[in-house]
Amino acid sequence: MKKFITTSLKTLSETPKKLVLVYILVYFLWGLGMNEFGTQMEIARFSHWWQVITCYIFYMIPISLLLRKYDFFNQYAYGLVAMGILEFMGYWLQTSYVYPNNIIEQLFNPQNLSLGMALFFALYFPAGNWLVAKIYKLIFRKDKDTTFLKQG
Image 1 (spheres, helix red, strand yellow):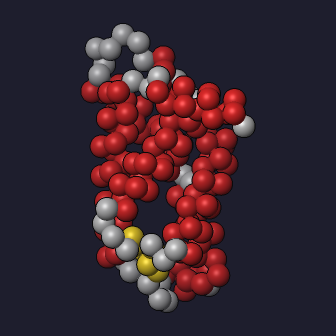
Image 2 (cartoon, rainbow, N blue to C red; image 1 turned 90 degrees about the vertical axis):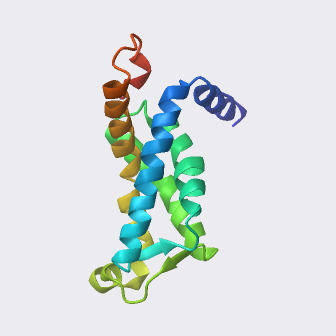
């Protein structure tokens, strides 16, 4: 476990600052958009807007950075574990609000809401890593070394 933590911290600390900035901008806007979508569609939302920061920036970005070297399937599989924990804790601690009788509950029944949310949001890790790499290359195309963006 000590080796895992040491390796993970090293990976995070060696990540270029410009890349981290792109992750922050993308995930923050993505989080605000999804929270607004969940609110407007009356599916689910954060209890407080600032949870976008704690969830998307402080939780999901470090996980994305650690998973970006893996292929799509492994990013999704590991991301599913991470999102399962996040979804479970959010509903247990009541920091996320689920609208009663929402469309997901109507389609799949209330007992499957958390699982459905975790299955969906686990896609954020491979999709987010792909999107950030594309945006980074577009903005910083003059950077000679982009080998750190290589995935899988």
